[in-house]
Amino acid sequence: MPDIPVWPQCNINCVFCSNPVSGYRDTGERYTFAEFEKKWKRYLETGHAFLKFDTGYDFISLTGGEPTCNPEFLKILALLRKTWPDRPVQLLTNARMCKYEKFCAPLMKIAGPSLEIKVPVCGYDAKTHEAITRTPGSFPDTIQGLRNMFALRSAGQRIGVRIILNKIQLKWLEKLLVFLLDEFPELDRVELLFVEYEGMAAHNFRTLDVSMKDCGAELGRLLPLLLRFRETGILHMPLCALPKGLWPFAWRTLDPMKVLFAPQCARCRVRKYCVGIHRSYAAKKGTSEFRPFSSRPKIVESGNTYRPVEEVS
Image 1: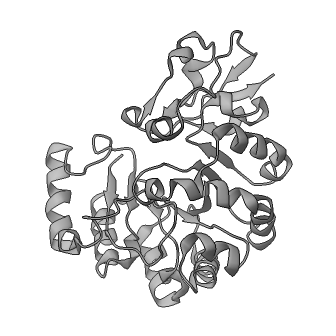
Image 2: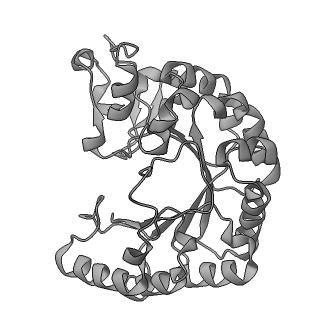
């Protein structure tokens, strides 16, 4: 898939943001419709134009900054749909712009049925959410944006929530999951991603620092809640950091260049199912907490290379 950054700036200021701290935000002139049109033409001709993951054609991922802040976002989306009317599009957005129905309605219409939207929700109320986004007013905007998306979506369009796992987030993760189940029972998917210590997140490492083992234990405790969602995905966490009951939710979506396997992983009997260890985590915290499995549990494979474990006992 091409991972397409649509706009470098953002209308929130998340403590866990992995975008560069400097030299990125003030480059809006590189993200005009005219510039995108050139890149898109080059991508269609050569298969290369975007920095990340641009060699695939299975689906398109629109990222930022905040992509919907691009003044020409709808034009860009319309161009993509003109070229690939049925190709799946993934939109990573904080949904604040979608609090405006006049923006949300054409977005949902232009995007067509093969659209999946993923929205970060950081807390169950304004105080908790905005402790992470560091942007007053962002919680009601995001929640209203989600409500508008659900009201305006058409058949085939999927809406999910992303939760970035870190020390702050774990304090109220249980209440957040309960809030999402109560407020948005129609959610198609919830994704829990361990923080990547890059950009602003690396700068705020001490504030965010939690071990993957401790994070995995908390997710295991919350398994009954996770089972209540239509779909659950756990990303960026190796299998030995998760209780076995969570392995069917573990996804391998990181580029191989971003991960490593510790020396002890060579002896692990389940390595072929594992995403590995994010390099930024290993650089900050080392790899001694990760333990290889000397025997392989009984695993039913899913056949999906991104989510390899269907069942484990």
